[in-house]
Image (cartoon, rainbow, N blue to C red; front, side):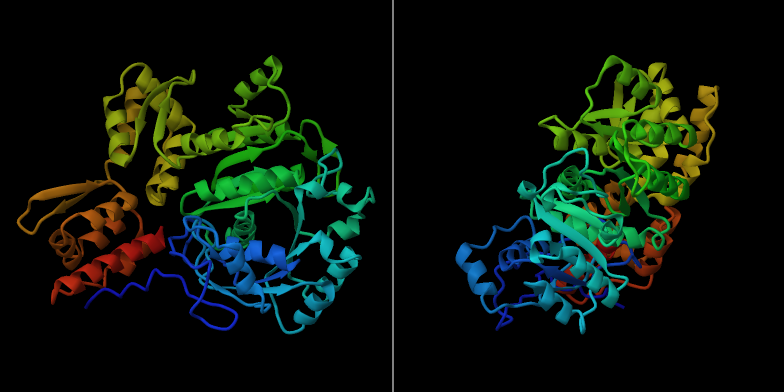
Length: 522
């Protein structure tokens, strides 16, 4: 039995009149959040100007590694008022296999369209209607379950004490918005020039609806009540997180505490502001960020967390954050996004594991499970104190979860690392050593490579001789290793298939199919 053939990686082509032209067409890549069974958005209604629709379509349909279409291409493509487009999975963002995007230029046109069209999400511009909230109330009457995202440009919103996901007044000529109006909007975003904000918006809804489906997925809790900063940070975060991680965005203390209490065992990181409301319609409290961090430090002290704030890092604040085990990022820093990315890579297990002493000094790095075990086995004195520090704060399990080694991560989290450092090291290695490298060999037994986790395995399958790959597949060695690593679902998908040796072409096709299966799981 051969491997299932890989579908073409070329994105579907589409146009207003002919399926042969698509200025936004590009190569489809793996979705970093793609877990089996997860909710995905399939239908979107954009209520905005034709120009804004062009920008949104470019974001949702054009991979980042392709050049933007020319002005003439945009005009030609949308001149016939094409309203429906089919998109491949968004690279780095959406899980959707196909996404239907419809466009309405007015509130009247949108309401007429909603009679026959049932989108999961409506993205609408504040400028689309003179009576914006009346329009939204009519939408909710027709489609009670629809998610509504309101979008405005940065120039139309002046951030102030009253500006948050819960209260925006500046964009309506100083007119206050009632609480009943606010309940019609699920979130407000500011389009600041990054077109991939629209991808992040779609992924945010998918994550919200997937966290109770993907019960083994990890969660990053983000607490941010200012639309501008959320709109700036989300595209970066979604381009940084690895497979199996969902983002939960909240804007008040009550909701943040509820999310933490419910999902604390799955949270792999917390990004929080300092000043935000007590509850969805409450007043802003100057220290709610610290209150949330105190709760997290008490319940789950090992969770990586960072305070993002406009507040200056005074000596007093620095001492408090040190006691709470929390990093600090200034929202006024010109390198805020770069520092946020470095925090996620360094502390949330998304890249190398960085061994640190409790005083913060770096002791070493591990690129994979093999390197991690070697450092732990060889550690002496301060390095062994670093191992104990990370084990007691669940940093190893967080990093392993980030690499999709969920069963191993769970076993490591269950360990209790006591005062006897040598005993703790022995117990930790006893668990880690149950998970060995996959050793690639040629049919004659010659070793040609080793993989410590599924990502490394996929990389080596691409580069190693085809006879080695076929040999292991035909003997069910890949599925056996996946099963041993706790990846039962992937093992079950791989087990039934063998390679077709009838030609070099079929062998290469089967290798690509194997890679596709692993990518799909990741």
